[in-house]
Length: 409
Image (tube, rainbow, N blue to C red; front, side):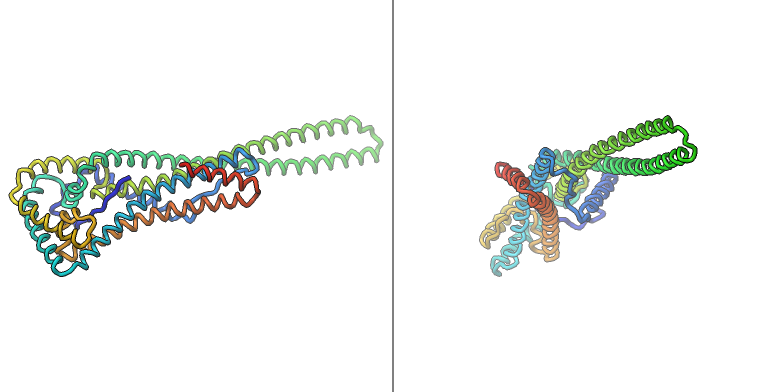
């Protein structure tokens, strides 16, 4: 996953293109998706333990392997986020170097940036009269033009995946509710059997007492009634035991299904959050709401760019000032210098620079949230493994063997 930083601009309503109805509708869906992710993140438990019979070797090993796979997924996401987090931090350090530059270099930066902005504004009036593309979108496309076709495909994949994951979450939620109800029904039937057993026991006791009283009082032959009562008692007891055994078997099956549903829900939730964050980051990168809008804006941009190619009156002066700016930034130690050509206004307008810094800090905060989320997932999974490890020596050996398999991944 490849991300780069950019700056949001305050949107001028007059310069914004009209919003197609489909974009507005999809934006509302995205807001709803964000609320769902926030609901998941508000849950105090990042990893829901499964109800697994640890005494069963097959179930225990399978559970440990699922825990290992969860760690691998979270760790992979952490590595991707850490890489991008380092880049955003590097851009913030560049801003600090520019703020602390000596007066001579700062003047060169200011003069060259001011001239770049003036010449750019001169050409900008020709750029946005006939194309439905905002200034923020244009700047993003200027910087990431080569990445756009690939990012459109990624965005489509993320959107399709988000729908699938959302459906999986809904289906798993329904399945968990169904299994919980089924479990309660089995418990209710078992309680009913106990009640029936007690009632039958009382009836049988009373019948035995009655037969005893009749025999003692009148010395009537009670052999046949006694045998009939015994046969009936045997039949009822057999039926009750059969139903009880059936309920126990059904309970085992239901609990296994519940464990599987919990395991799948854990993985789907993690995939849901990571997929949504990646999707959210790409839409933020290009100032769009979905892949359809990005494709539309990109087509507008390509049409406009063909016209802009014929309007190069100030190209030479811009290039000269660009060279001065790059050399001056290199002299003060700025690492990512080319980006400031399209961010020249921030170099001459302190409020713009504050906005750039603010947006970078926001992006770093989003990345930190994703990193913290996956770190907590790994922590809770490892805690679960430690809990299993401490139960028996053979469990500890299984945990160590499963964890050792991560070294080759």
